[in-house]
Image (cartoon, rainbow, N blue to C red; front, side, top):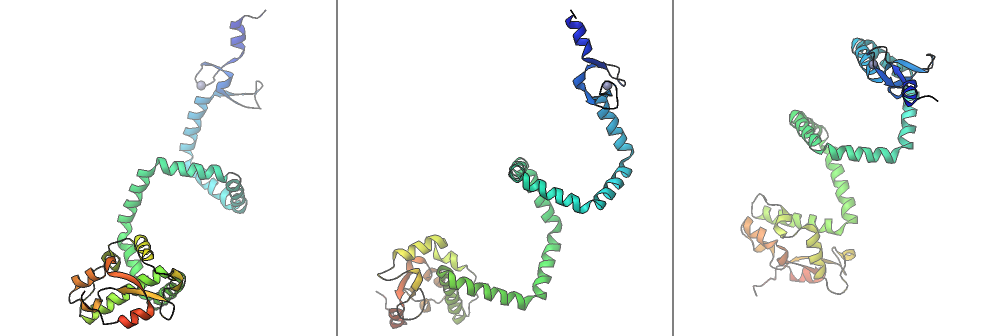
Length: 257
Ligand SMILES: [Zn+2]
């Protein structure tokens, strides 16, 4: 009957590098050796690999580059297949990585922005200068499309336009933002106007013409003489939805109540 000590020794092997007796698990498998194990233990092998890689850094890099170049298509295909197969896991991993490195990423981004700020601004200005007309056309197209589908957007554009005209009439350069003068966020303003709807009014019939409503300044903008007064008159409390025809009749007839 073999003793436990004998059995223990039978599952041990001496590393040819550090000369320490170690368990079989501490050796990589190697088919060319009679015992099927590498002659150096895992830690020794690791150190040897690192030394080899360090000594042959450039040669390895060149070989790797050549290999990648030769197998470009095959590698790309393999990468694609791998991403498809493990898409969920990769997504999760990416998310986790971002979560763990949030601060470092933010710092890096900020650093990058600071370093390239001037170039980016100059590039963007040049792009604007070179494509001014095209950009204007695209902007008009975008606005038209959005106005057609988003009455609230159309309403805010119209408000801005009216304020702009009122400012021009007073030879004032409009400094404030239309949205700031409302005293509400766009969403709050939309809800506010909705609460003032009378029978038949909806966002589908906002506009000019019969059976349509437009936005009325209760106290008209033409009463303002300064920019501050214009700002005050554009407060949401001074705005109400009104049937287009009534608004037309009211034009200029406002009287202090
Ligand atoms: Zn060793």
